[in-house]
Length: 405
Image (tube, rainbow, N blue to C red; front, side, top):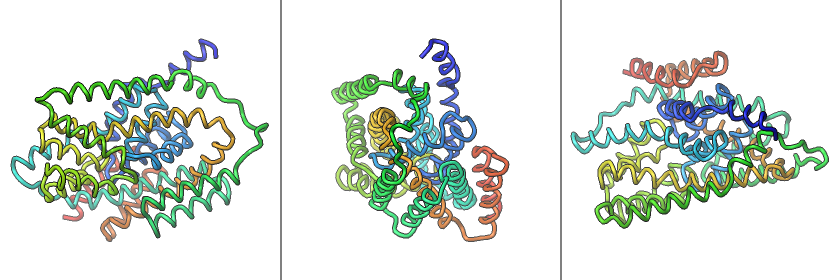
């Protein structure tokens, strides 16, 4: 690759500050669970900024689904890594968590100072149909580009129906495995027809190597050990170790994690009461970003702001590191025609799973004419006028506050 070509690719990359600002906005508006957050990420990075392709996003979602930890944050780390390497992954993951972290920190202070926080149900009655529209619009946009034939459409529809009618983590694994197998059987091409690797992929493999990833992991372990040996921060280190240990054993998304976390923080360590734990989960649901930001509340109760920071790092950082290592190998494996065929099948299934998530969220919304109007208006704003999500969510919340009062 020539020096001029490398300079052009480097110049086309967004600055780290631009990425930070994009994901601050995403983290401030992504209400409604992990699929809503992923949909907002896709809206910004693929549709608006064109920093990634639909296939890039679908690969990231597919990989995150079968790895431990919070799916949405893992996808964000993947996206940042694809755009700007290790630094991009760290910036994007930090920025998307930061708004929820700060909000939970404030709510935790208010909770333990003044008691329970008043419910804001009417606002979220307005937000939920808008979130459903964002997810459905995402599946439509991805489907237009990736579902090019009857076979692809059929895989997506079957995946959607299985997730709606059966659901659960094991159903998700079966869908991913079966779609990959079908892709390998149906979409595999003759090796002679494969296209040469493009310059961007070559640059990616040169600049984002496994050594950098392992250095990040080693540095993180060293920081943890230094923190652990400081007696005055022992409880914060224990929080970090506990949440980090849980995070790499948790598969299936935030709601699947709740029983195991409850067993550890309520029954085993008795850091919070059962009621406080339920309130922590509720706060995680009413804030933007990932539901596992509830770890911040628990860390704050145990060891103040430093404890909140340690618990938050513990629940999000280790799975993100695993995600980045697997992303490195995914990019190398994608040159194989077998892997390309498998991923094509999986992408079709992921589109169906996203559509199923939109259906599930819509079923949680208030059954009323107002909800239907908000849903339709949000769909039109997204599909016809390409309006930014950052405007749709707050507007829907204000409408809900007024209309449902």
